[in-house]
Length: 226
Image 1 (cartoon, rainbow, N blue to C red):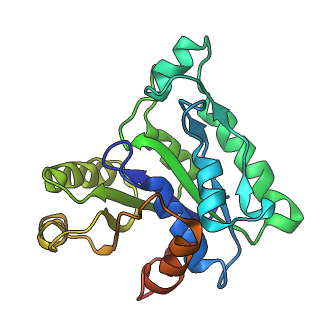
Image 2 (cartoon, rainbow, N blue to C red):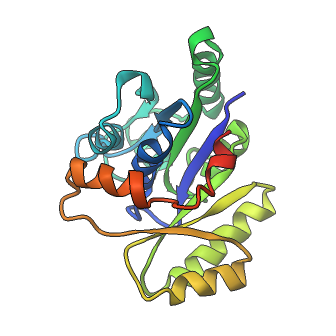
Image 3 (cartoon, one colour):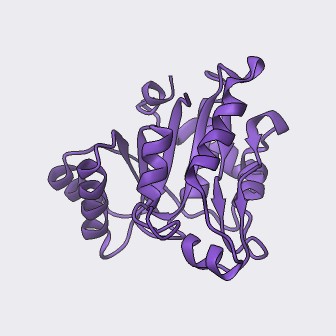
């Protein structure tokens, strides 16, 4: 059984990878953590595992680098089809559980980053929410702080709740005047944990300092990691 958080988004490229790296920086001093990206598409252009490693200065013990790695920056189900493969969620679940059950890994808390949004298809019958259900982790939603985010976030909340997922909260990616966050909290009946500002090319030293001192200042997410 895994323990930790599943990081999803309201869309692709909304800041899930940055959020995962921030979680590592913020909480590694309080609890042993490990990052995992089960499914990565467009691997030639993007490597979220490498980016989390760089931003958080993660050790090898904090990164689980195995998983499905596919060319072409498209939806997982399509990337797999184009590569003549089928993504097997049970295979991914077993992979993680074997690692988590190792004697020296049993205290680790996992930060699992999804691909795209909550309802992204991974094969002919399953969605990203099915991977969330298989791993049975609370879900942290990352939402772009821009026009349209209220609708996208409320739809994501509704989809997750309809599937019985426990939701840890929402992170807003990008600065704003607070109106989006207030609306999401009011209509979504959920806590907006933090805003993640846009960093210029995300230098790791500046990022780590911000994450350690300003990310989730109230420690709201720690209870979901324990």
